[in-house]
Image (cartoon, rainbow, N blue to C red):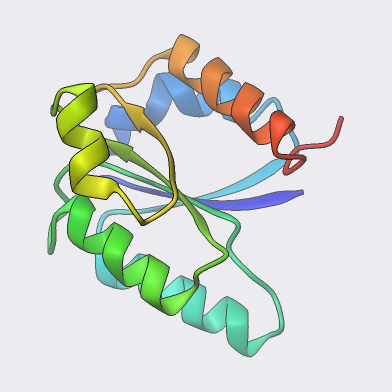
Length: 129
């Protein structure tokens, strides 16, 4: 089971993709702030648990996706991140290089984006079916 947090100002941003993700062994929590993501990671760590995956919108209520990736990486280096971004592929690579971001999502990711993410998670043996 993968424990994931989806972070977006508007839950509808990830609804289509989440429908696909929920078909895999994934426990999904929703939030709209980076602070809440970091608190969930901290609470999980205090219980000896972990958040495996954070999927974030480009801009949250309290910080950018890039800022959240940086803070998640510093707080919980083994937590994987996926980020929505309007940057070109090259700009995205330059901006997020060194943070281990699994993939770039388009704005309002659809079911196909969810399928691509599940395929990556399977390749990394994070999802075992």
